[in-house]
Image (cartoon, rainbow, N blue to C red):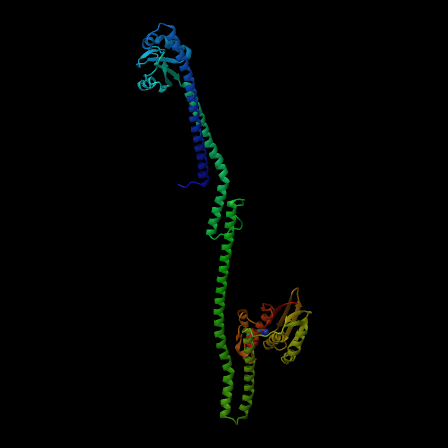
Length: 488
Ligand code: ADP
């Protein structure tokens, strides 16, 4: 069975107080009894003196007899007379131990008479003897004769008064004891209630920490050891929570790093596979023309055709090598940024100036609306980004189409959009266009000299300058790219 701590404490306190009271009562009762005995002895000794005086007086005033005969003859009357003086029952014994007279009426003594022989022998030897009988004390003292001890006088002292006083005292102690027991239990229970409640709250807090539910404040506020323990538990809870969340965070980061590493490995494998494939294609075409020229070097048509195609494929190879090198440099963190405070409208004007000729060749119009804005960027990277985007807007456009460039300056960012009225990008390709070598339509890309490396390069450059690039979902025809840079 489980007892609560407040019950145990209260019981302990009640028992402790009751024990203290019992010891105190015992000592008081013993003290009272001793005191009463001493008082009784003094009282009886005085009466014995009176008895001796009276017996002597009677002996000397009457006819001179032997003490033995005197007692036998006058003992009865003397005893009755002395009982009158002292107010006690008196019995006289002669020197031989025989009863010489008593004030007790025949048949009046209640109960069985005690055996007095031992006490009598003691008193006959000149000493005081006591004997308890029923509810009284028999006090035996030597009775002095003219020369020596004449006999013994026995006084019966009733103890009822003392005994009743002791009984009253005992009753008082018992009732006080019971009251103290109940009261101290109640007071103890109330007193320990708060402490026990605090302990119970500490227990609950420890339990919840065990179940990984950490506490947000000390469970108890007190200015004692329990309060200090509560602070300790709170501190411990916070430390455990902190170290566990740090461990979880580490684990999460590790998992993230592992996933990233795996993805990177996969990406790299694919990248290398793509590079080999993309490089092989123009090289195969060049090699085929070289072989054909080897065989038919006098065919002027083949010669013209070969010159044209070899030049096209070489240009494509050149473009690819350049972009691959740029991308690799960016990814290996070898990128050396020469960032500076760039006036966006001016830089966009510059890009448009460069690309307008090409656009017009394809029958396209380029427009620019730019609010004044400044960003922190390497001008060469800025040029790369927008040349690539405008190049795509030209490549994937239709004759008579438009290309729009807009720059808006918001509170702390600069938003640049590049929109075209071209063929657009299907929704399923939206996330893939930023992956290296991805092309929505490989044939069209190839025809236009595309490599699938333009947008990955653009995204890398933008991100290196703390910017973002997204392809917006639009209702209108064509594609809209949104670039956001922190403004300065
Ligand atoms: P590419 O050299 O093939 O243009 P990019 O990385 O620049 O490579 O673009 C990836 C692919 O995204 C392109 O092949 C093309 O299919 C698609 N694309 C990019 N820009 C546009 C655009 N403005 N309009 C339509 N399709 C686009």
